[in-house]
Length: 552
Image (tube, rainbow, N blue to C red; front, side):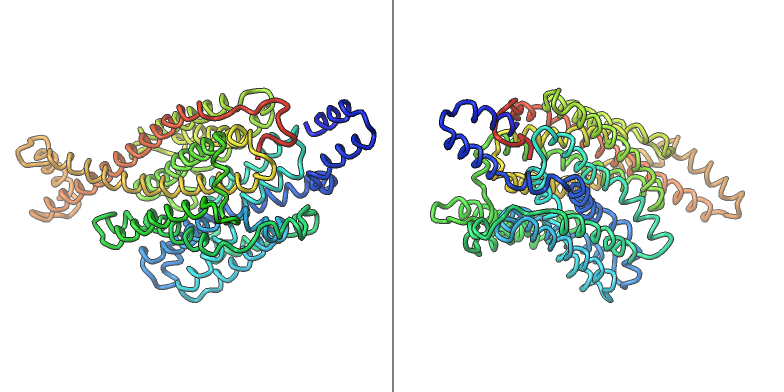
């Protein structure tokens, strides 16, 4: 596309000196494209590896939490801070990645983030107590914020427009496949080695990413461009940390403390609301010449509509992952390794859809691809909503495959459509906002689904218990029948009856949990369907529009 624009510009100019000036200006506008032409495919591998590093670490550690709690001598409630700390720092730093990349240069910022991520992983493994693990997880989350948004901005710079569909599909592998593979890998490591292994594995991955990016990637930033970031927006950073940090805390801890019934959750929610509103006002204030978060990019309909859809997809994707993990681990009593095996079809489905999207990205309206992907996600989630106590791995392959296929087939086209009108100079801001939308959507999704499962499990339990009374002859008959079976196994008198009631109680708990999980899957399906009208807000990339890729 850039080449066509150059040829057209040259053809319409009369004077040779003006012609050379016009061509020079267009070439100089994107020097990274020429500077990285030789090694850009190797750089792509490094960027994919860095994305896998960040996405994988959000889920692989969860598998090791029970073993970590035992080793570090803390409760199940306390060990949850290992995950909470990571998301807290990640959400706070995500909106700042565009400014940080501009201030320090994309290469410097990206390489430093990968290095810090690897070092903090080692320090997590070496930590003697929970407090130290939480501290280094905060550092890890802050460093991980750049590994997707900044990496995507680099891809826009170093690849021509005609290759963006394929390149972004390859990059999408890290976003979609890693969450499906991470539980399997984490379960295998924990069962065969120790919880420290889930942190050790980050070191060689980070080393590969540092080499491919640090050695091969040539940053086009200059001292002048870095100075254009201006002074540090201390007020904006503080308001951002208070607002988004408080919001993330509420989403992570709300269910544990029964939401607004707890005075501290209520207070922190108010702080979150005030912080976010104040941050928005300050970042848009006319006298703030160097905002740490460029919210003015939301003037583009393509961006804000894509962010909203990314938010909704994040709710659905993280929601179905969480609901499925709860179902197979706590209801069906799957081990961590078996849970990882059960989620493999998601990765396979995502691989298939990304391959298709890469092949048809320049042929089919991306909005059609988004619709197909969302419908596939909704169908797979709805099918999972009919699970039973006898559900096996073979029964979940197709539903999970559909969810993975839909996620891979909708995420990339949303980016293509959403960023169709954004300039190349806004790529980092756009990527950061997309990442924030997806991450916050995931946090909201887990909070919503966790609360929904808990409430619906209690609801179905209460409904079942209404019928388990002595006036119900069927129930009374079953109690006597089971008590007779207990007597055959050595129980006598009241002990046999109590054992029968305990067995029925266990069955009630299992059935109510199954129905609670099924209700959550069906709710996720409805969320995906609710995204469909939002697709009408997206913009289709116009052929020949702009001087650079329409996808950022």
